[in-house]
Image 1 (cartoon, rainbow, N blue to C red):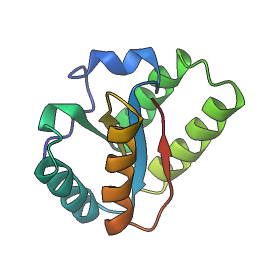
Image 2 (image 1 turned 180 degrees about the horizontal axis):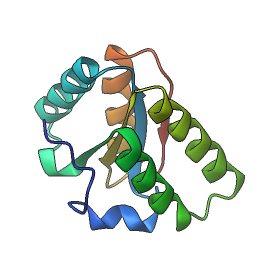
Image 3 (image 1 turned 30 degrees about the vertical axis):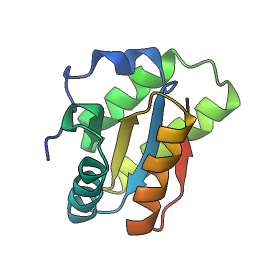
Amino acid sequence: MSDNINDDHDDLQDGPQGHAIGFVDSTSQCVNVVTALNAAGFSESSITVLKGEQGANRLKEMMKGSLWGESAEELQRQGLNELDHGHCVLVIEAEDLEKANLAAQIRCKLVAIPSTISV
């Protein structure tokens, strides 16, 4: 699993649209979710893991372009809270709602924290 928290995914600058976003408690959970996503056909390059201060900065940048209004503010607040507690934020590219739902279902089978879906 790679930690794509720098400039590997410039598309994140466009906001959460076209992505499924989920939270995981630990690195081991993150590895399990990424492995399951890969097995379901999501490429390594379509999955970004945000962690720590760099991840928080990246999430803030990503949310700047969002047209979600209050929903974006809530997603950012929740994501920053998760990162502040040492958890990870997964950002998965999803070409449509079906792929976003699949990513969320996979993550939910392995982690009890709610997901956010955006397409």
